[in-house]
View 1 (cartoon, rainbow, N blue to C red):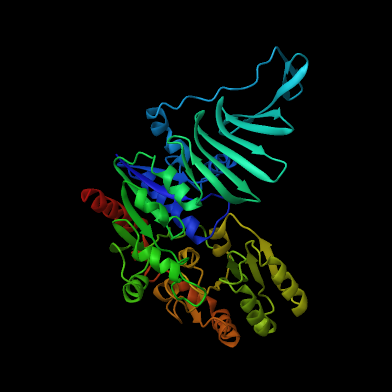
View 2: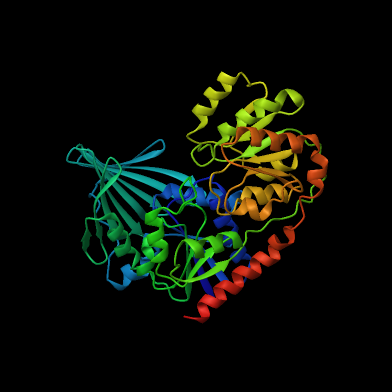
Length: 475
């Protein structure tokens, strides 16, 4: 069985199109019996494990997907190196249960305090050990030490990450910034965060594995990854102007791996024009499930997006909608999502006095339901690797008004057929695109399925199976 890893810097309960695309990939491999999909998290905090459990419980991530942190993936290396489980806790001669906590005493003085709680990932214990005016906080999962955090009066924080009670890595930070790290398996000290990350990552056993790096942020780990490696390019390697960020260009051209993957043919051609990829290029489009829910009454324009206005200029769409809203009194504009731009959008809505027609509806966990009930989706973006929300909308008979940017919008939207394209920043053009769709929404809705067969789930599974098999055959 081939293990298929997808690397996360950390996971959250929300996430944009890139995150959903990675979840879809993991779920796809969980459907194929020859693969063992693993979400590999660089963040070892036990709250991350809880978030993963919640994502599985609500069906976002399939039950067949496994979860590992980097220290847990280093467990075999720690055993081979003779690392012993930590057990150097203070001695005590009395244990007293006081409500939800257990207090350990030595000669009448408190030496440890445990607080236990049942969670979806097992029994979690927080053990506080006061020492020399400081406090060490150990976090256990089902009796195994998972993490130790020691906060110091001078603002430094020392964190030790364990793999089933075996100490694997130690990090010292100040105000959240890396200061120094130590690989506890090899006793190697590193003063550069990326070198430290590579040093620990190198301890992982990668036998019969393929590793996906999503975007360039974790690509620096590829040289020490002794597996078949694939770099999936979304759009985060390009700036708001669509140009490749120089540092990203360097990382892509020097990616130490066997494949570079993108989701559109347009993007593949642009990559070949802009740079010299370090590995063979593959195209794997995302997939969509064609909506089969009962037809419902549709109303309003919607946007489902992060409220990050540099890359998602929703404020332009609000201004455009306000130019036409009086011509369509029964249609409002509902914006679903959260992000740093919320305050600016609230101020704009107040200034334009359009709060009765434009609403910030908050984050949604059911974007497909939103699309099924909408007249059209408005998708503002300055650069787009694919645009999974476009595909999700079209697959649910919801036409899309998108910005005419690389790469997905131009590949999925046929103006006048299943949506409209408008240049970013051209408020008049955006307003006119909204007007065209709202004047005849049924015609646009009728043709949203045109061309979606290339994004069928069966093709998606086949593409990933063929790509991974091609990579492992070269091993």
